[in-house]
Image 1 (cartoon, rainbow, N blue to C red):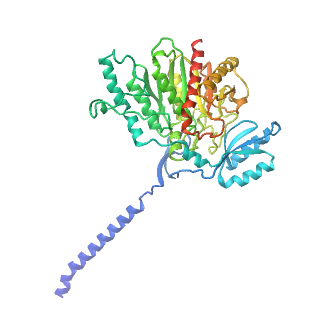
Image 2: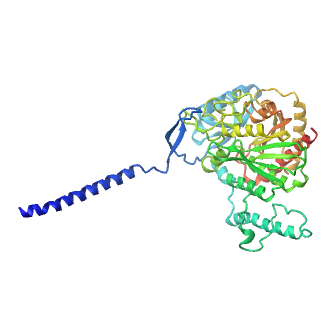
Image 3: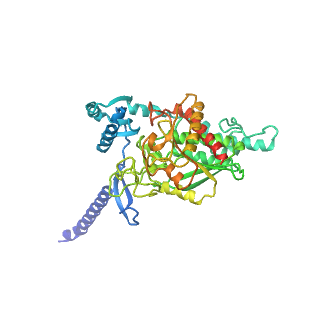
Length: 501
């Protein structure tokens, strides 16, 4: 009996420990059950368009998209086949068999994935449509497009601001020895070692490679800090994912100077556009003492999409707006402006690359541009938006095959631009001038039409940069400088035209 009573505490203790172990196992198991894998993310999204009610949702993270074996074809028909070319292209796009890159009534460039090549080829032959392979292996072209900078090159670039800060101090003390600012492209060599001016961080901008958004925005901030009398930077709004839309103003303060708006990168995959625009910025700042106009420049109008082309899908076009009620993402920002929105050349399907959004200015990126102009007191005379590719100088209207009343002036200055661009790049590049809808294709809700019709800008152009199709959107970085020189020539010609207004 005594032995039995003595064993009770021991048994109780054993049971208690067993319960604790079991509970700990349950807790540990519960914790493991709620570990979220890397390929899943929890997001907040509106219940309906423009709704303030937010719901939690689970999304699968995008894997990086590759284009192994995919090809780019140029499909060509006769004048009598132009309706056939248009219909075939439309049918294939809607079925997902190909992606339209660029084209007009009789010639289109299309991207065909490797698994669809036999099927698309048979169909085109049945329709008696000719095609040629322009890019044999798209992924290989992407891999070779943008060589990375070495660690030594990055270190050299990041020292620029420090060296310039040191040199600037010397120039102030010894003005007779350093009479004018040294060009940004050729900073002073290394000087004092660590400390002192080396506390400054340099920028990484150069034009032998395509740069991420961080580099571009860092360059704008660098210019504003280093040249405050000439440059200022303002964020005019934020993108869908919260990235700033940074505009740099370049002005030497001349009174009554005409103002020009320049933007790039509204279509994410057109890397040459922001590269050329930053090159233009560099030239204007280096030559600021001779400027006779003010420039307001937005190098990357679609920052979310631009970053996405580096991290997930090199050929992404739209912004990154999640569409309510659809598995597809993105709005074509150059179909989202509030003039003739939703007309020809647009789609109401969120899965299409020309999806115009739920309404005019439904996107924060386009809204930011609109609000900027509504608040600005600048004397704007021109609106230049850089795209690629095809080598076109396009003026309104894009919504239909019509022209504005002053189209003769736009045509005349456009031809001057074309001549200057041909001379500037060293390749004798031919740029075709014309009305957007007639020369290329109809596209309603574009920024150029809005700038002409609503803002009353005199000179409004969409400039499609290099090339004519050999590389398309995947233009190798070695072509940045010659292409950017052509873009700069266009800006200079339009500036001269604005001075006479």
